Image (tube, rainbow, N blue to C red):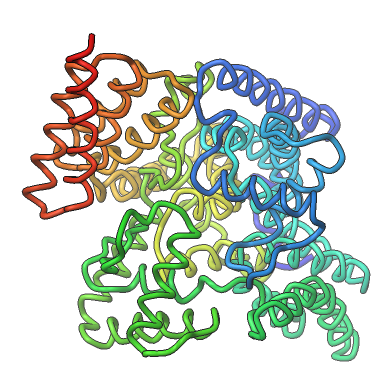
Length: 560
């Protein structure tokens, strides 16, 4: 037994959870997680307008999955989003029929199994008591329940990342070639979901080759490293070949890395997802239009047509130029990203957790939040720094997500798989506090509570503005309007305008909703406001639209 393994701590405690069998603990976690997720789905099925329509990215994934299911093809373009999620959806559609309710029901089961995977990871790293606490925390983690009801790639990425780390820890204890091959296979799948885990792969290879704990020969380590890498390459290769076939372009998996790097590192951004000014006619409100806009600007600037990899490289160079222009401002931006990654606020992009709580009483319960997890996880990390080699995959996985946020920007859904890796550390800290209280170790307990207090101040420090929510209300109004639930759409648009009164698109869609509801007088007032804003902004497109609607509404009033 090594020195690190013999240290006293939660993994050696003899608490009541230690006396429960793994089967009882896993069964409890599974049932609790599944029940919460089923009730949540039943709630949003009745109330949430996004349930059957999905969000911006969700609609794109759904359309792509339908195409794959019917045409058995990824399409005739170079891939620009991670292909795993639409492939997963396409398999479900081909087997059971198309529809988002089926997808979300399957995701409820996948989410439940993710809680069990977190238990297994914590069991491998810290022992039974910590594992039980970690699994229960994941089961009642509000964002995890929320994401299960959305059409987002995190529903696959999180369980895959947790499984990779768990398999790597087990493979260290039982270093057979097949165990590393399985670990590489799951990491390859995770990479097809989102390429963040590409940062984790070389770290694990180095760990396999140079970790001195398992007394293995260099030859056996090389075999382990090769068997780990081969499945990753085998999974990526078909998509690289597809990209070359359809676009005569070398793109490993997808081609948006350069855009994201520029968006996250340009001057004037705040460390979150923010579109740069691109001088593009119309709104850039979905990934397809965004790809067209970034490609058009790059081609216009260089004066020639570009392949997707060249477009990505162009924006990568633009991002590096932004950094070189003012490195001190960039350092401040990186520090802000680091703070945002560890901040209690959930930086939303497609869907807002806070607004979605009105549709599910499960989400209104006092569930575990990131603000609860983060201070405990940071304390747990500090308490385990001496075990970093022993727990290297867990540390490396979390580091990969942290570094990826620094490279681009912070979003709640991008951070979420990293949060799943933080939960075992948070559970470790909780059990450590409990053990010290039971042993009356008041000095150590006081030190840890002081650390938690300081860390909580850091985690809850206000770094974002609630003004961001105007777009969440706007998106909600659009979904209600698409379902012809006009009164609810009107209310959502009014909520958006209370936060950002000058956003012309909200005024435009409010006017459309008022027309749909039959309130012609208020629709005329609203279109008049749209025209007024359009004149102030010099937006001829909105002026023409407002004039057209006002003319039709005045004619309708005359004939009534």
